[in-house]
Image (cartoon, rainbow, N blue to C red; front, top):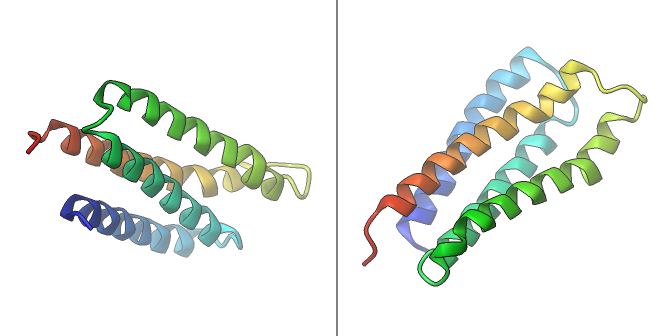
Length: 122
């Protein structure tokens, strides 16, 4: 496995575990670990996809990033929203339980992709 992939996965994992620890201390939500795990794997999938295609299809990488974002929203509407709407109400607290890990994973993913794409090709 490439060192950039290992570094990204480690960085994403550390950030999400730290945020999860704080988030779980403040708010007790039974679905919190699911939300963090799902965001980890979705961010890792998008990063891995772009990493694998960065040399062969460089002109389409922005589209792949957008497709990854669309995939995340699709997963949200198919898997997460029904979980949140079990009581027919999505409270701010429930929404933030998903949105906080989404924002942190998106930040790490975007920052790592910028670093990856700005490095010279070998």
